[in-house]
Structures are given as structure tokens and as C-alpha cells.
Length: 119
Image (tube, rainbow, N blue to C red; front, side, top):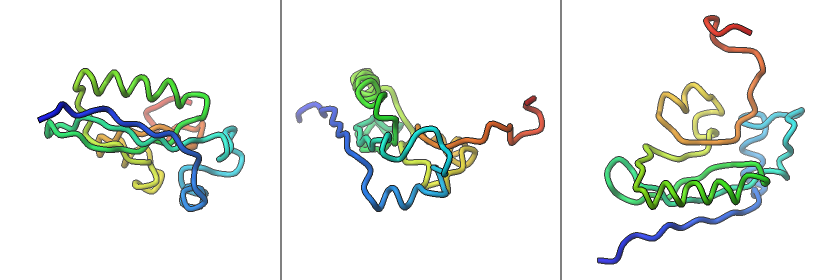
């Protein structure tokens, strides 16, 4: 059986993805416009030792570097629990992190959401 091969694609956000993100993981006033974001579809090794396909939204300027980094992780068989856009979690960082989700772009408030974290 042939060894799995890393696959990656880099595309502009579709109108449907832009609509899905607006008001959820991207908000008016964000310093990065929707036009400056890219959708990456990437192969990764899961904790089940199988190859999966995931999605990341990243800044256009970081897309090539991110593909290179995830290619290296794939070649090292570094396990990733899941790789889904944060919109699958209602744009909620906390929910995404609790699910051990690997994601990238998400507009965040500069104010801490947890009282134990100083401003």
C-alpha cells in the first residue's frame, strides 16, 4: 500500500464562507479584511493514525508558510485531534480550544474574557 501523500490547497474565501464568518469569527473593524484571508485545506495525521483533511482560515501573507509548516508536521506524523474553522464552534475560542481544535483566524476582543487574566 502506498504511503499517504500530503495534500494542500489555498483558495480565496467563497461568498458562502464570507457570509458564514461575518458576525461570527470576523467582525466589522477587524484589521484584516475578508479579502485578505485564505482557506487552506490540508492533510493531517489524526490520533487514530489515519490521514484526515482539515480546513484553516489564514491571512494571505501567512498561507505559504502555513502550508510548509503543516507539510513538515505531516511528514513527522505529528498527530492533530481535528482541524476545523472556528465558525464550527460559533466563533468561540474557548469552545474550539476545549475541543482540541487546530484553527487560525478569529477576530478577538482585546479585553480578557477571564477575570483571572489581567488586562
